[in-house]
Length: 295
Image 1 (tube, one colour):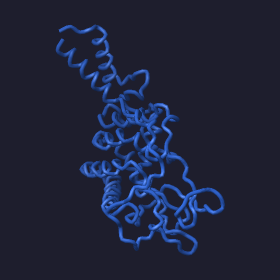
Image 2: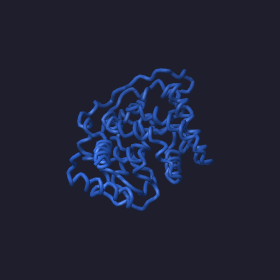
Image 3: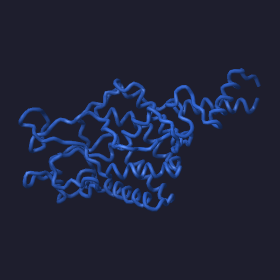
Image 4: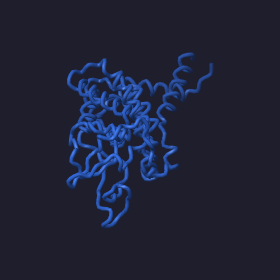
């Protein structure tokens, strides 16, 4: 079988990369080896700023009528998301979460487009972060090194701000759990979603404390469900009470099984092309490998 010399050289380069942990000219395209993947400080929110609401939480706008500031509230708190991810990385078990990283990578552009992000302003950031997620899932990139990747900043932003773990609500709350779990969030996300999020939270805590790798299957399965949601849960005034000058979740309202989707942004077509290219490189190298083997 004929094979071109440059294909043999390319395969040789691939082998040298695998075994020496050297890198291509741009690691973000095809991350290989060990890197510093530790989440340290709280990443900034990757979505645009939210407009204020009126006191009845029925309209958004600017000016004195719209005095209620709102934000995206975590259901599973950031500190748990960070500790869990860092612990999995320290134990070199990120590859065990490959199913989640695959869904995350292929939905990353949807997280952006469905929540008002202008993808034209991001360059290749979404593609590079998606490639990194795929590399973690395939095990070609691993935690525990000293090298850094520029794509990790975008990766950690969207991981710690997954739309399926966020809901929009007033900042002035009497029931804000601070660094705790949002125990009243069922009224916002629905009973079935809340069960998933609560189970995921408890299993993450157990894993952080005990390092039981058998939990990773259940955690990954639940993370898959959370990552399947593209849009942050929107503010519904029926879910809030205003008591003594502060807002709180209306937990007395029966949790709904179906949550309506409120479109506050038009999905941006500029994000459509921002999908991972990692598998294309992997497929090409696999084909070259097969041809060299038969040669």
